[in-house]
Length: 329
Image: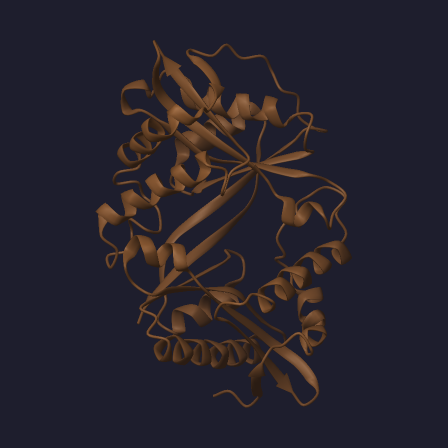
């Protein structure tokens, strides 16, 4: 039972949570060579500040033990997911506590209870949370609150200072996406990601047709520049047989000394699989990023061993994993 005080986190009380952020072991981007803890702290504090400044309904909570902050949680509405799945959805972005195991579990239990009550008040039907796989205290608290594991994602990183990019011959022409490529790209995405094993398709409360549509809309938003900085397509005799999307991590590049990019979506037509198109897209993405960033990261589900072998062969290394949990309200 929570014996601490829980209150809303505001811009005025934001600095109180900095000690929680400072000692948290699993900060994003901690794998970046030469990055200092202060830089990552400033990045996380900047993210929290930005979320508190958002005009739409987002919620953040602070747990206090006397005058000391010992816990933090944030809740973010997901309007894009709502549009796809026709249900109110939200995500817990930050769920942190300090103390020994029992104290942290108690704090997190109280925070999750607060968040779940808030979600029910808001008619939220679906709640998700992604945490570092090594953060067992947080995982235990989520499980105790009825959250179910949906997937585990792994992140690989290519360090241009430590890995050389070998030459590779591509089986098909790869070029920048043009406006007339948008609809074929969207259609290919919807087809190719059918029955994909991810947190959406693994969730029994989400229908497969909507999960497929999510990837189609993701591809469309990438093509028009909403969620990607560059899109490439591969073509065979004038027909698109795959596409890839790339983006810069602009939100963190302001806080650390290195620049980071990501190859986000890679899609290959079922008929073109096994021909080397996927590896060509990754290689081409690295060539495009080479003079622009210091690191390139890629992410996939832990059971997607094929792409992980391709990444390793090109010089990527495994740097972390995260577990995704869903709760149905």
